[in-house]
Each structure stands twice: as C-alpha cells, then as structure tokens.
Image (tube, rainbow over all chains, first blue to last red; front, side, top):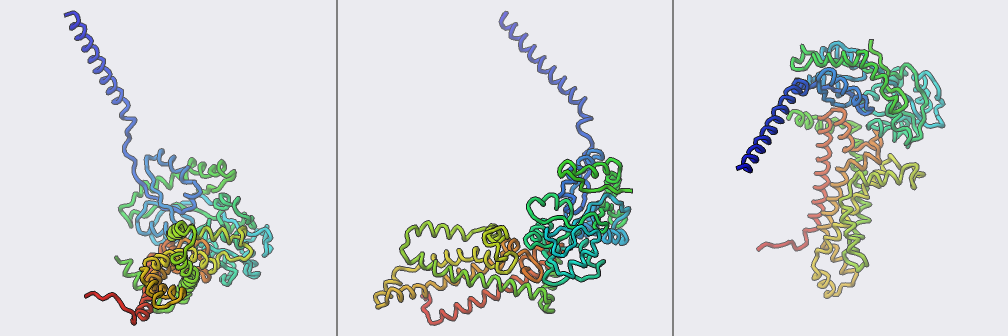
Length: 287
Length: 239
C-alpha cells in the first residue's frame, strides 16, 4: 500500500511537471509570437543589368532594403536592352539600368515614371602596353577612338547590343566614324570573354571598371584611358507605370527607388567595393 | 506559338533576300564542318579499319578509349585546343586562335573518334565468312580486306553522317576557339546563342531552321550517294 501510494505520488508529480512545462512553454511561445511572425514579405520584381549582380552590389544592398521595408526582391539580371523590354511588357515592377537614351525613351513612351539618378561607374579603355595607337594617358576618348581607327589598331567590340556595346557605339558616333575592317573585331560575347579575346589579340577594348578589376590579374592588358567624362556610365532606377500596367507593384517600386536614393542607400553604394577590391566601384549621385 | 511562325517567316525571308551576313555565316558553317569531316574521315576510317582487322597489342583498351572520346564534351575539346593555341600555349606562335582553322581543329577532335569507332564497329560486325569467301575465291590479303571495306560501307556512311551531325550542331567548342567574331568566325550555332542573348528569339529560331534545312540537304545527298553504290549489290531479300 505504501509502495502504491509512493508510485501514485510520483506519477502525479511527473504529470504535474509535464503539464507545467507545457503551459510555461506555450505561454512563452505566445509571448514571442507577435515578434516572430511579421506579416509575410511582399514580392518585388526587379529587372537589372548583369553588372549590378556580377559585381556583387545587389548581394550587399538588397538584404538591407528587404529588412527595412519587408519586401522580398526577385532579381532578373539581363542586358540593359532586355531589362527595358521586360519593363515595357509589364513583366517587372521596377528596372535599374544604364543606358540614358533608352531610359528616356522608356519614360517618354509612358512605360515608366519618376526616373531617378542612382549612381554611376566608369568605363576604361584598355589595351596592350606597347600602345600601338599611341593614345595612352589621353583625356579625350573621342579623339583617341579617331586615332585607333586612323591607325587601324586592333579593337575588340562586344557587338551584342549590351549597355557596354551601346556606350562604345555612342563614342564611335560622336567620333563620326563607322568602324569596319579587319582591325574592328566584333566578338558577340560577354565582357569577360571579350576581355580574354582582346588580350589574345593584343587589342584595345572598352570595359567597365568592375569587370576589369575582377579579372585584370589573369591578363596583360593595361589601362590606357580612364577618368574621361564621356566614359562615365550613369545608372537610373525607374518604376514601371501603374497606369499602363495595373498589376505592377508601384508602391513597392517607389519604395525601392526612394530607398536607393536615400542617404542610407547612397552611403552603402559608395562604400561598396572598398573592402572587396580596395577601390570604390560605384559613385552615388542621387539628387 | 507566334514566335515559331515569326521565326519560320524570318528564316524564309533571310534566305529569300540572300542576306549577305547570313549567307556568309552559313557558308562558313559548311566550310568548317565539312573540312573537319574530311580530315576526320582520312584519319578515322583507316584507323578504325586497322583496329578491327589487325592484331594489335592493347587493341581492346585502345577501342575503349576511342568509344569514350566519342562522348567528349565539345566545350572540353574546345578548351584543349584553346590551351594549345593561346599565345602562352605550345602552338601560340602560329596565331591560329580565333580563326576558322582553330574551329576545324576542335571539330576534328570531336568527329575523328566517332568515325574511327563506328568504322571499327561496322567492320567487326561483318562475318568472318566475307573474308574467307574472298580468300577462297583467290583474293590476296589486300584484296580480301578491300572486299570487307566495301561490305562495311553502309556502316561507314552512318559513321560519317553521325560525325557531321555532331560537328554542324556543335556550339561549345567553336564559341571558345573561334570566338564568334562577326564576318570571321561566326557560324550558325554561335549566331543562335548571340541572338537568343540579345532577346531576338525569332531570328534565333530562323537561324535554327536554316541549320536544320542544311543538315537535311547534306544527309539527303549522302543517302543518295549510298543508294547509287548499293544498286548492283544483293540487298536482303525477304521471302
């Protein structure tokens, strides 16, 4: 009888302990609940250029934007031309691209509204150390292009209608030259492949600074021209026009554009690259 | 569906208008792949026949290697050729990188094992009887071997069409060693890659249709040739 009593008490004690932990646990969870499950994050579709993704900029700044605004950003990284097409089809909410003329047309055609300046990076002219065209250290890119064409020095072009390709074609137009001939090599490939080809051919090429810094140790080509105004490459952010496409998330797109151009976003853009490459890659220039 | 209709329309248009760039690209594709095929045949058919007919030490392991190379990834073949031809590579001084010759080189690496391996198979599949009959009829060793090769030609033609199909449709190697340079090393397959990346899907489809049409015509010609040589032979009679 005594044994049974003891056992009974033990079972009772265990049960009580068990129940108590349950209750306490529940209570704790209830107390935590409001903090742990915020309203689900909304999705924002961003079409942008490969340069912003490949350089690693988006990996650094997007998580902060997402946390600040409770959004989940889906990035579609393509060429500038294709990114603008996606915006014009209403497939994305906002675009971040670099081709001023095409951007202005995008807004003029009513596909996007409220374009804002975000930042710029710059292009370089690189080439062999022997510098066959004799343009090293020049500060006038257009004159240098004229010299390259006059001397028929080998030049590798992307030739793929990318933002970089458009930039290069723009410089040729300003130099009033239609490049053609055996010296003008159109690779039809990406920046990395074009860099590699220019190195093999000991040719000049136009390259963005981020790609150059990331790959320069593998090749011999040197910076021939940098810092010229016509080599600047401004990026703009444009929300897609909700009047044209009612389905797009205009509110989120505006939040994103505002955040990118805010003091916080601009500061992060300016600091990006210093740690990774020892050099700032993008210069914030929101007004 | 629209994009396919557009693609077919554009393909017909490109050919109809004799667009000079597409003509040049098509001719280069043909030139590179046919050259690679001829070189592969010159290397592959005798090697394959020898492997099948002669007693060579280590024959089995050699055949095994050939069969493995039949599945060589094009981009790997391209990389090997690239490393040989880059100015830092052993053959760098010839400056062959980014030329059609480099593309032929890479395609031979892809096509020769196919020609060699399938020829060996075709010859080995023949019955010993063929050789014996020829020998009993008084044929010399050389003549008997020639008879075997004649008997094996359907298999050899199959080897050549397979090899041609592989190289004309290949993109990884020619992109790497040719560089897809406009007016110089751009071929049909690398154009498809470029047009796709630029978002010109219907042009890409159009070029694809040109490629398939070309392949169809070439195969038709090969089959015609084969049929002509078969006319006087006994074909299998089903009674």
